[in-house]
Image 1 (cartoon, rainbow, N blue to C red):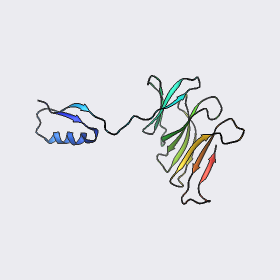
Image 2: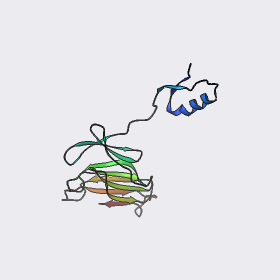
Image 3: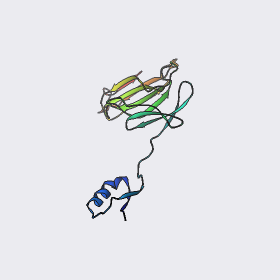
Image 4: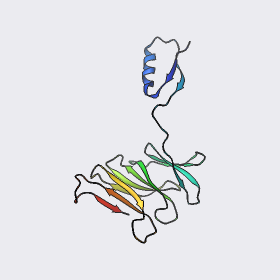
Length: 172
């Protein structure tokens, strides 16, 4: 009778190693897989210029855009950039085309980047590199400039040590 294994991802190597050194006559077969502790990435609902709904998700540093049937429309993972957070997904510059504003690492924090990506095709439209000055920086999009209908982007950099001469706010 063949050996049968119930595979748990965190102990798979142990089981394979254990049975490899045992006196086995036949190769083991997997009878089941149980995924412990991982979760499906979050999906942000967005709309293309024509109103078509799509889903956005960050997976292993890459931004994925999915159609409602689950098909991948596009994926982007620029070299040296790992997307971490979707800050906004709308028409930010007033040109009628929706964009995705993302906070990213270069390739990881504290080296950061604010990146604007076209929602239509995933092309990078703008990038602002955030240099390490401290332990934290934040990215926002909103109406901060009076009498302007376009959204503005704010990069808020904390500094260490925190005092009046360190840190900055950049408005785009």
